[in-house]
Image 1 (spheres, rainbow, N blue to C red):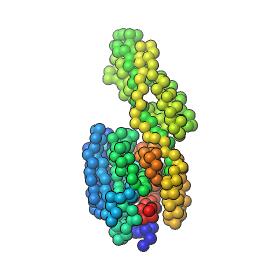
Image 2 (cartoon, rainbow, N blue to C red; image 1 turned 90 degrees about the vertical axis):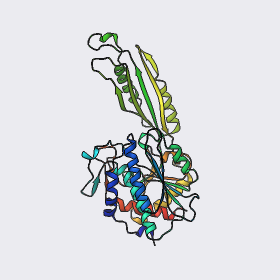
Image 3 (spheres, one colour; image 1 turned 180 degrees about the vertical axis):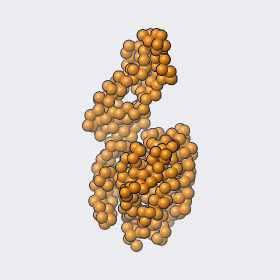
Image 4 (cartoon, one colour; image 1 turned 45 degrees about the vertical axis):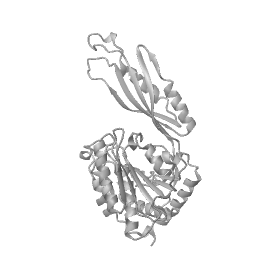
Length: 377
């Protein structure tokens, strides 16, 4: 039986996906993410997999590893690598409920990347239900901390991927439905200004505001952005009392670099900002980094050619190239393991209150996943 003819049904997939979307799982809420993992573990088990729960570390939720039955189980095979954490805090469902409208379906995390993860699970479920056997053993690994840069599970992902023939990452498809075969580096930095406290009304001149100093540095940092290396400050924490000159201010920077050379220059530029001026010190600490994944690995290109042929048979052209917006594919691709990223659902608005998917893409992407799982050798 041609795997592309398996009886995928968008309505059935939406019904199965809805509990995943309504199980909110923000990265920093370990208990919530672990509840989502338990829900996914149930569905994986029902699909026929043997599921192992891996306890979380570093304050993050659990991970799960699911192995599907195969005569060569334990040998190099295919890894489906995805994350089940989202950027949306608990309570987002009140503003962004699961709902359908004009061929679209909305909900927190539905595009990034619960929809893609669920589609791959459905592909495997239908393969087994039809009595088919994938050429290679298939393992799913779902992790809890991708939106924070994967600080606690990078080693787990790399260890799992090291001996695999291929890694499939069902992150959201590109705008044109294309896949990703390389990614730019993503570096994070933690910033700290230390000032001098004083009473803001009684002795303002005696103080040195850490907030004001940080504000000036933020403008300086974001002005360093170029086409090849960007800098964006997305988090600021400071102050407890409006009548106190702030003594500390913390911020976080995300930098994207297209090449290793761009990354090295960006890191050097950030570290060079450390200084003390007018009684306020400015400190820069480098955080987690996703390495550059170059789009020229022969194994990845071969994997893309397989996917391109499958998508043509389904009825669409699958483009591919490098992209920003790091993923766990950065790690496996940089290791040299053949990796195909962004084969998940089509949609828009990820990380916003307009996050949605195209309902029809559920069937399209399930067929693509099934074709890949049944073709890669």
